[in-house]
Length: 483
Ligand SMILES: [Zn+2]
Image 1: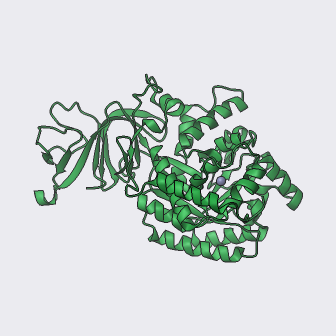
Image 2: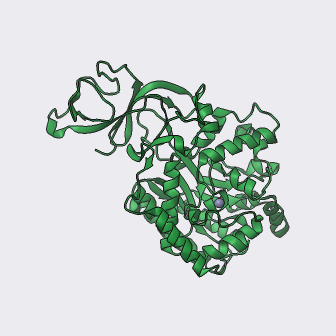
Image 3: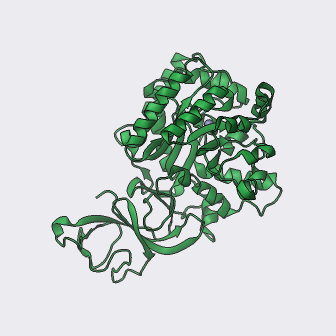
């Protein structure tokens, strides 16, 4: 039965970075029911299963719990085999089991543009290479791009992603088909005459999604694109509408130093000042990037705000270090830490959608920016990888009774990760998608024994190749907006 799993003998990595185990993790109906120390299984007794409730092992009844076979667990309340539940037992000996990774900022359909715009500055990246092609994307292109992105993210151990794009109903449909958790912001460009219409369309879609139109794992929030592509009226209208709908926002802010200078020149205000005046910082808000935040803007930040950083994009587009590394440690409310999580941005700028790679780069850059090898340690980088679970609000992000079973089984028996003195070091500094053996979302295997198991009726590679050919044949269209 989907969602009933027993992960045996793995060490576990908790949300706070502590490592425990080996443990047995019992998952029932997609939720972690118990986490208990593993018991050597010569007798077959495993503490994750209540003794006496196992009534058989198929196929080939053996005395104990043999990984890889299916157990029948009697329902004590009913007591008949007819109502028995099947539980799949999977051996995780020698592996590390962690909560799933979250991609806190991406544009998943842009996987279709991977590698289309290299070695260009940020203005040409937007105006010459990307936006003209984006303007000709069809719903089918968006679907295929999303399928490619979700396949890649699952391969990397991502169990939830935050998206920001147009035609987002297509992304939502694909996420639902994959059983992936998603928080999607339909993008609103607020410079043209149609912004009110876009806002109304987005609101309807958000309402439908949050009423369950795309299942209970896909949610939506308000997505004004950025202060530099939205007038003050639009920013205010988005904040007001988000409040009415009871949702948060997701917006790009201060990705480059030039954006900050341009904002001051055009409006006499910094980007965060404009957001603050619009009321966008007083509601749950995901700030994509924000790396060029200024010291005087820190006091404007509300308590329910999280930054989503994607340093691979900054490195490729030569965006500079920014100021976030400096303020992150003490710039939050009451001089606490700013909340910063890890995104990937789209594959058109980052080329990959692996938050682990981004987190690694971010930590390394921070050490160098601050000229201090002792800061941004393993636990802090891990905490940043887990930060997105809070914004998601779907009871994920730890390995303990009552949490949704969104889990990754890491196998470090590869040349680039072995030997393992500290599993967190192996994970943060050495591991890649090849070390992700299994991925579960709500107790369902989405990657198993190294193979992604979604969209199995579609050859995503062939479909993406067809979209690429169509895009090139259509050529560049007219950009929606000038950067
Ligand atoms: Zn972005």
